Image (cartoon, rainbow, N blue to C red):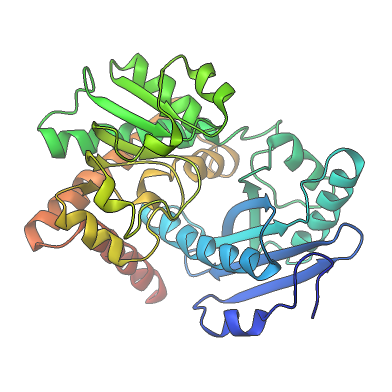
Length: 353
């Protein structure tokens, strides 16, 4: 099989090692895009997860990304106690489309999601805005986060992350007070930009780094060049951009006491949790920290919550982290393993009926 962008791909080889339920793969001949919808689990309910549009080196990289992210969504939903399973979609494009070609691709994508009958319900992710989701909703009823309903999930993600950072700081330093704490936010996009401003309002000394200088300037915070971000001496490093930034090469360079951020799949491999622990760096598991977006959308659109109830549920992310940190200390394990235990307990309980 050959795409109009990239070389031949081995989708079967990738899927053979995946633990998900099913995947849908479609080549969109008109745009040259590959569409991947990965449903990792429906144990807790219909699968939910965002749509990511991105240029990848090869189509197989887009499928691999969707597979990893769908598994993270299963963990995120379970850890947050939401009645949904995990899924993810990727539109692997040769270049980011604009105008009518973009709308036509999004409508065709919506038709594909609609054909799954609600087993996968989508929202926004990288390069997908609420306005884009309005277009998807023209052909699909299973869309969260359009401009007229739950809105941009970035505010919920950032708000929950603020509660998560307070819980992390409390465990690392003995108090949740952010006044005077130094926090580096890596990525000043739809989530990181909001988080940086909320942290500053809470009294923290906030440093921001992003490849886009205009975005860092818009936060009004101190800026750090991207190539110096890891070595910045701060209390908390908060990755809020692409995943995989915590790895065997980068972890020895960290000069922080704790890591708590909104990026998905921050650890390049599971062993990186142990590497952080060995360095004495407290790690708040990413899929716990960044659950605010799905809490906001499901709560407002499906559960009928008002804003006070939403804020209560977002604050619950901090409570979950406090529980995980306590369990990790008591059992001499990493917070990442404590989070995996929580996910397994909730999935097994539901599966047992």
